Length: 396
Image (tube, rainbow, N blue to C red; front, side):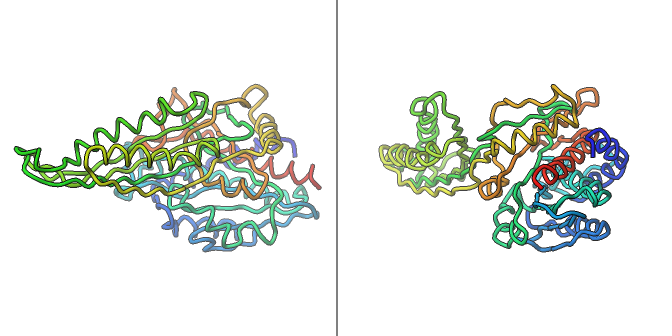
């Protein structure tokens, strides 16, 4: 199958892709709640003749297509979950669920893989092996890739390669980006509790002000990145929440903070817990407060297999046109639990452009006004289907 013919076929089902995406957008489901979405996906795959397994690792769905020829196994993955964000868009397909919306494009990812499923099912004689489709829950949290793996998603049969993509709001529709090696960051969480001594705000000397200590802690922690880390290392330490105090005239006895730690290097990642603990505990005790810290390791670095990255870049270029695929973009400090799959199977993860200024679609992900250019949907379906067919053909 030539890439141009496959793209034409994908555009031929473009209205279906848009309808699926808009339906998911109107009915968002957060992590491990994707029952409606999963049921639609499973029914769609069964109608196409796929072997279907539901409830994988929670609400995951697997579809297996056995081709007309024997050969290797390739996997394609999409995430299905939404975010706990109130949709602020004024569009006919805005979220109908208060406080939930698809603010990261996973509705589009699901529609894209459903479209790829159609393209592949229509060409059984060209499927020289087996294609395993992984529809994953909870990428935004608590994480669905690892539960699916633990539930056998990569077994019986085990794929020799896995490909995935993410609709990207920093890239124009019709373009894509991919890089070998570290592509997205490890994502860890730190929880900090400062315990002081409460008292009257007019007599600060009688207490230990947890809010004042928190201010010193925040400033001190920033030195880990600005003054302790190699400027060429990629590391982010962001404190995203802080809670403490009761009213204006009361010395706060406790402050709680949470933060995220992002790294691209295993050695830097391994050092961060100890460095944060040293600075945090030192600052607290210097000011007579008691520290308590919890550190939770989250998604590891999403690293593209160099050979698979080059392969997927070539497939994307065949669909989008030469010169429309950036193969040396900067890594991204966002996290992705596709990393767990990439640790076990040679994999590649593509950023596919879905921004279009002429349509007013430029808002970043995780924003209440987020949207995608739906013209990117057929492009994604064609790229994934072409990558699967080409991998099976060249690997058989």
